[in-house]
Amino acid sequence: MTSNSASRGADRSPRDSVVLPRVTLVACGGTIATVPTAEAVLQRTASELLTSVEAIDTLATLDTRDVIGKPSHLMTLDDISAVADAACDAAGQAGTDGVVVTHGTDILEEVAYLTDLWHDGEAPIVFTGAQRNAASPDGDGPGNIRDSIRVAASPAARGIGVLLCFAGQVFSAVRVRKVDTISLHAFDALGDVLGRISSGEVRLYARHDRPAAIRPRRLAHGVHLVRLCAAADGTLVDAAVTAGAQAIIVETFGAGTAPAEVVDAVAAASAAGVLVAFVSRCERGGLWSQPGRGGFDDLVGAGAVPMQDLDGGKARMRLLALLGARDANAAQVRAELLQER
Image (tube, rainbow, N blue to C red; front, side, top):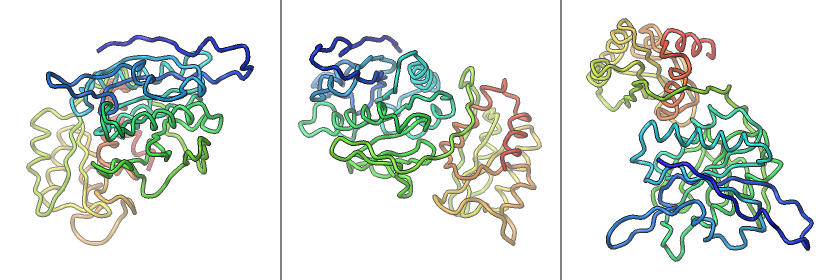
């Protein structure tokens, strides 16, 4: 894991009296930086990524930081912490107008959301990546970097928090998900697009409320995610408790339903002092009470806390951040979650 910085474009010709915005590119590996060779898979640095973008120096004065150089599916919690910390630190530097983070797409939505929880400044942080590697003759990485720099430098993006810019579209980190493994339009947010880049112009249509900042000292606590499937029982919840989980996210059916065996396992986990929260597998509608056994009310009665409007991966990131910021005090975290209902 390395962290360094460099600057380019700071000395501009006197003929150009326009003061360019200052943007930092934080490079974290991934497909966008990958160059396959016969011997190995290489990862381009931030400066090398910028050389692939035409007329880059006309967009902003650019600083660079190299933090991680690996595919995102191999990243550890320490790596993820390093990415969020570097992005927030860069955004907090005097004179910085915005930050772009290049990142692997596999877990990009989770790391961007975690960074949104950490970030309490005004400068936008814009995550991006690529579906085609850096050696591809028709790669999408350079265009995504160019668009992301434009968004990061845009006054309209100030105070909006952490964004994802991909294939000419802009999404909130809170809502975005990877939805396609092949298409260049790899991300979506149930059609909730905050903006677009058209003919080099950044057009932002909407803003979302930002979550309260949570700055954990370290992401070191065991938070397990259990996704329910047809005829599921409590085996995986029990296994998470046995493995020493401090918290468990249960991704339930529908509006918050689960088989009776799962409800029993949740009750046992809660009684053992494990923080249990639940979300829905569904992308729309959220959690709500309905009649019958194994519903929302039964899970709440078993001690589980509903977390509305988050998928399982993001809910896990939120619990990791809260536990890291509250010295692993699960009871305090549970009380905070209940206050948000």
